[in-house]
Picture 1 (cartoon, rainbow, N blue to C red):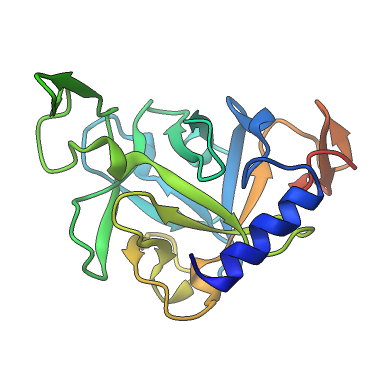
Picture 2 (picture 1 turned 30 degrees about the vertical axis):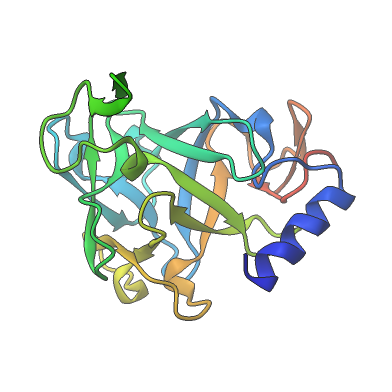
Length: 216
């Protein structure tokens, strides 16, 4: 475990936070805004077909830009899945290769089924058929600003907006972390909270953004 993560865990313990993202966010609908470009994570046209591209797109408030959080597991290394509200597809890394530039797409939920001690896939025939490719660690970049890195639980790649470009349709990809680049830093925005609200459902917000704290 690197020193940065150890320091983050210790800071959370002092604040009595057991998860990288407060567990109360399970089921909450959010936008993910890239901090370099200002664009949001967008499932192209809200498509329902497996393999639908996920890109950066200017904010339009559509359900194609809204993602429902699903908590997976109950440890401090708790992972999350992001289900698109428009289509029901999940934020998915295309395959389990750690190669930089691996595309990120929408894909139906992959479910692991244990058979005779071995795990097989119950659904989602294709390259995106490993549940771990749909599970992500949400790692706050700061304890009070809502900024985070989003790391794939299977390949350890980070959710990356190509070069942090502002153009609509800029591809989103998996990329190894080399430094704290803005194109890998995301702001979690609660899609159900008015920007003037500071507190809702026991979670602390400032201008509609998660502050990194469970309570204000």
